[in-house]
Length: 196
Length: 196
DNA sequence: CATAATAACTAATGTGATTAGTTTTTGCAA
DNA sequence: TTGCAAAAACTAATCACATTAGTTATTATG
Image (cartoon, rainbow over all chains, first blue to last red; front, side, top):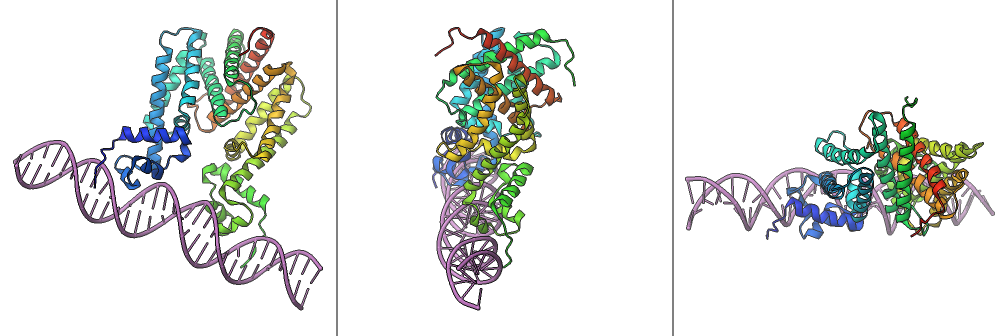
């Protein structure tokens, strides 16, 4: 009965590879165990079942996002920040489709740790938008906006939702520019009656 | 051995209710059979296994979208069209979260019928954007843009991605206005060197 | 009224998650 | 060094779900 010396990071790493290569669906205790050359019940020594494995994947994904984005935002100011953030977001989703998927499917509103990890990423988006001089609720709406834009694009791209043979990088750049132009205009208009 | 008289539409209807109420994950042959008061193998008389059931759900979802959007676009012209389309999109996703999910997870690039049904919906978005006088590739990028915006918002809203107690309808309106303002500006700028 | 198609069924198999209980290694303290 | 406790792996067993094969009864149609 040889002992592998498996630990949680190794396990998550293997699961990440599976997810990124074959989609989150393909990450089962059975497939992961096979990849790690152990029997699936042995995984319970490291992880509390499949839901917990997915949760760990989501956490790991959020941490990696934070790290990547922090790196990408170094030395960026003003309008550069949003673009740097956005391209880093796109790059992450492309490099880690499975991990990105894991992050999306972890809504558990009562999971403190997960909420905080997600909050850190959102906060980076908030900061990145600061150069636009938005205030109060407008700023919050804008963050929701950029999140929608980024997630929407990334998500449609990943699932092959864009059929046409038209350069996706161009679409992304235009989309981002369009949204940011709109933000500028809207900001100018601000102060009128936009409640309810 | 009583015969229920089940048919495909009834079956899809029941599956839709399950999906909308408990999420697409909850639609299993077992749960559907239970809801319909039959044994799960009996479902194979109407549907070719779980993948086929999901496919039928996606098709049904796309048809309903087409119908709803057609209805919403009646009598709309110019700039009104995009907004009408967008609000109809939002309304559908809110009313049928499970069906919306089913539509998203049906990428099969070799499924002609599914591609066509999806194409019809995309075509409606193309038409809705026509009032903006976009030409050629720019128009295609714009359609990808509005799709990203709509899907991104709807998707984040559905999974509770927006934590704050800030009115989601307002966010949606602002997001849409912002993007469309951006489109106007970008359209004005068009004609310069934006290839690659 | 007879029969063919159909819609339901039961039985059985396979895969994956999970639990219980066992064995062996390993780390640490006497 | 020896011995023990915790941990990491295991086997065996159960449960849920999907799927297939083969059976039976109903319905529709000639």
